[in-house]
Image (cartoon, rainbow, N blue to C red; front, side, top):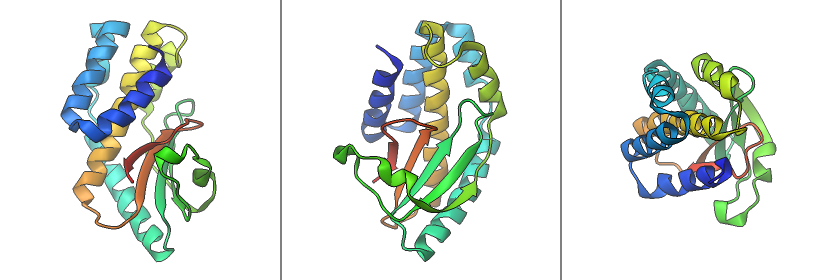
Length: 179
């Protein structure tokens, strides 16, 4: 299974599993592909501060989106640039089934998000998908990032019709947390 198959599976998992089950699944994938030591080193990194930062930015993004009658908030993080991130407020949105994520590049406003240097440091060691170790490590880093974003959003319990999405820079398709 290549990394893009895992990414597609992650989207399905977000609809069918709770966040703890997802975390465990991708920990096990990382353990199998990259070894238990790598999986443990990723798991041991506390993301509490990161989730809190995401909550603050999400709260601001939701307010901005509601003022503009936007349809989506798109959160993008950059694997190759210290896991830097940006929240984009998008007037347009297309459902996952439409197979058209061009809406995310037509944003009205943006807000700088947090960085996750610890993940970037691990990612730099293995790269994206050059071997099984890289695939296992990368998919677990991505899964933990997505889970952190989902946790931050769940706490806000936003009842609006905004779509809430996440992807790393140039990822296709974009992962939907809420449609």
